[in-house]
Structure formats: C-alpha cells, structure tokens
Length: 142
Image 1 (cartoon, rainbow, N blue to C red):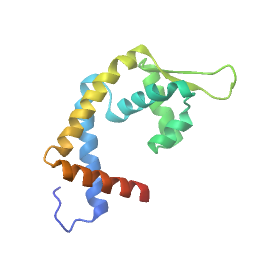
Image 2 (tube, one colour):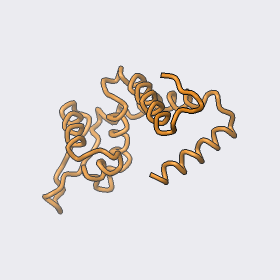
Image 3 (tube, rainbow, N blue to C red):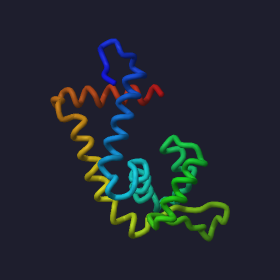
Image 4 (cartoon, one colour):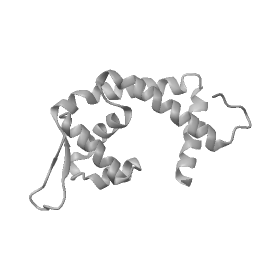
C-alpha cells in the first residue's frame, strides 16, 4: 500500500510500523527469532543486574503480561534466558540472559543497525535531526 500526501498520520505511522517490523524480522530470521524476541533479549541483558522482572518488560514493551509470559517461556525453552527466584523475595522471578542468548546480541544489534540505516539512507543530516525531533514529540504526546 502506497501513501499520498493526504494519507492520515495514523494510517501512515501504522504502515511504517508494519514495514519496519517486517524488515527487522527478516534481518534476524536466520537466527531463529523475530525482532521482538531479539529486542527483548538485548533489553534483558542491559538491565538484568537491576533485578529485572516480567512486569518491567511488560511496561517497557507495552505488551500485556500474558504475552510477555508466553515470549519468556519460548525464550527459556530455547535456552536463551532463565528466570530465577532471588533469595530475598520468593514471590518474584528475576530474568537473566544465558550464554546462548548472549552470543546472539551482537548479531541482533548489527541487523537492527542495518535496518535503521536503510530507514534514513535517503535523508540528509538535517532531515534526520528534524525526523528525530518530530518522532520524539509524537512519542511524548502518547
């Protein structure tokens, strides 16, 4: 679906989001995961020392708890992450990246970087800065 200058913003943002997800998924499919799983593993790795729990992921990725549970179970079964009960709080499970997941993080980052470069390849540096400012404003309004 192509857009024209009269395409409503919501429709255009949805279309861009779908295209970006498809490209990101394609960029890491040879790793056996989708882009959301890749982002999840990278985020867990960056924040695991802070006692990361499922609720934190749900809030960060704007996904319902049941969906995060399902994603974590899949990653755990594949050996990418583990959930451990800390000694000081038996009601929660902290989440950690295992060596198998850690080995993929660099590949995720390179793949996502290539997709990002493709997004802005035809933009000047000034265009990129304006786009960043506009997207930041839009994000803050939501």
